[in-house]
Image (cartoon, rainbow, N blue to C red; front, side, top):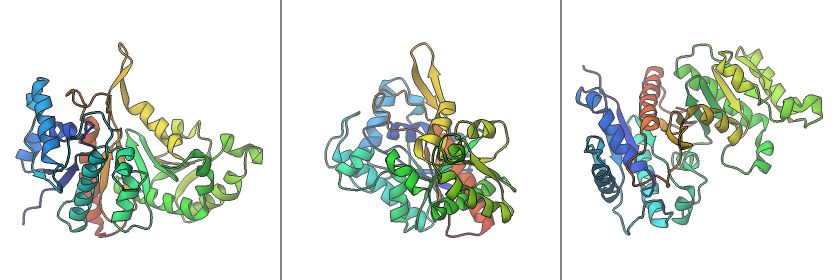
Length: 345
């Protein structure tokens, strides 16, 4: 029996941003693989947003990127959405696309979801009280928790906390949460091909607390959890000061890093992923993928925001979306080989 080709759903994200354009460009770039029967893509969003993005590309001389997509429309547009402007209508459309994709993945109709960026402000303006994609996915899949992981080149970084105020971040570093994050991170690394993953754990405090002078979280919480995993046979090191742990990972000492809070991990990955036009000082591309661990489905995402400043100009770079699709296919295949129906990506 021939193997079924992987099916990935692209959610359009916020229609006021670059998401619809990314869906079209990614589909166009991957057209040879689609025609060869290696991959199937379906876009979930409003017809109005996708058609407008196609017209934008054609007007910008990007007709070759204005691919026709297989479109699923979970909700029709109810009001106009303006490029670059936050609105409740844009948030409503984005949420319905995510909701439909999750339902399809839970039923096994698709193998993975690759999401375009949303506006957290727009989602909340539409009445959906979530801090972001990760929290929506965890809630709608009935997951007990989730972990945000960023992947770029040699960096694979998961986060103990993500979309919370920095003032609360250290309080969220508990033995239970850290154990959960390390478990999921190690398993994700195995699914990415590392049979015996080497894991570095970032410290909470500068210099890992400097013997307690700068806080005791690393001594009282982080170190004991690491020791527990080490005794279980995991190759794990830490707590490693946050200003050196990523350098060690880039040097090949770790296959993955556990960061303690959002910016600790994000700054390291995005500093490498952004491509800057040195003439203008503006970013022109971003490499990297966001993965949500701890879900019963496979979800990846672009590693950037809505880019309201360039929405509607036809110049968005689809590289991160293409990488998200490819990584989603890899994770879905690894899950099938492992025979797991629920659990993390």
